[in-house]
Image 1 (spheres, rainbow, N blue to C red):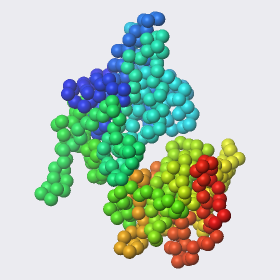
Image 2: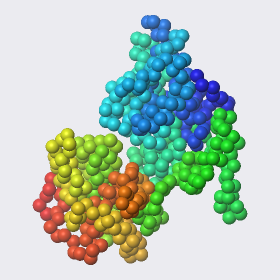
Image 3: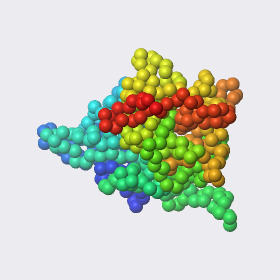
Image 4: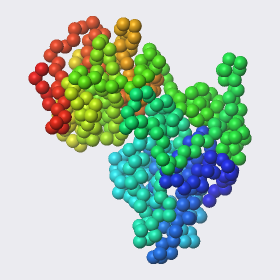
Length: 495
């Protein structure tokens, strides 16, 4: 094993020696989190009780990263630094990335996988493990973590059963719309949540959370402005870093990057100019949760693809109330459509519904003759292309939202967003930003926030805001449909 010093009394040492069935360590870059997690895996392997059958200490672990390039370039590299092949056996670089370690009475298998493809998720579901380690948890969705907790049953009881079984994870400070930011209390809990909704903002009993000290200490002037930084003497892992490691890290970096990566703060790191600079959280986001208004028409805007998204909104008294968002991860319309249907049933049971989506949703896929529109229609959810949107014009889409954000009515903004729509808020606040394409033209970035923001655009045009922007009359032929909760289906009603 690589030489690595764990200083007693540090959060890193506490994490490595913990035995909770779910432990997360969060800290700055360079704080030793990944090496600590690798070390902990081997500790559990060595502490596993012997099998009554053959006397071996048998364990199996999964090490998970969100992408294959990052898994190979960083996670596996760190693992092999800790447990080199010349001492611990050959690493299998084939299709299944595995490392089988055998010494003395220890028999430990480690599967390395990236959960960025559907087949990789199935691998996790079909496996049985002693423990699962999520590297860079800030990039992992909650449903995958939930799935992981159901796979912990190795070795079998006749082989002695697992002495310890659980999930461990490391992470840098998450984005404010990530589920870990909510349950660790790093973002404020919105007012007016039901008891069921509050669960998303509460840390589960029995889980361990180890928050490391920031890497730096800020120096402030008399007005509270940051004038410089020095290394925090209380930071973890300093003995294993070059003396100038953090000084070099901050060179040329913006404050939001330093706050997120080195000060362990939940902040919005923006890489370009926001698409909607007129958006203001204090103006457009409500303090209390916005509840659906019974009987009032709901308009749903949707974006398709492998990261589908939906926005649910109602127009009431010349105001646009954005109440819910729904995001999918690595899934198609077949999986996403029932989720949209379920949310409509639960939140808008007596409301007429209109659905608008990306016009490309009418295109057939390469492996399926059915389009996204066909799939939604089979669930009783007929989707239309936004009226008046020609060639999926991005300028019209973006300008429609901008026009609405700039409008006031009776002294308050027309657009009001519920605080539970965190991904939309983060996107509007700057994560959805402009960048230059190959021709040098500025266009919205097609990144993680683009899906929810695209869905918003389609919904806003479907709501009639595109025509309002062009000073045109609403389209009178559009008819909403009713949601029938008794039969769990949706039908178009004669209005």
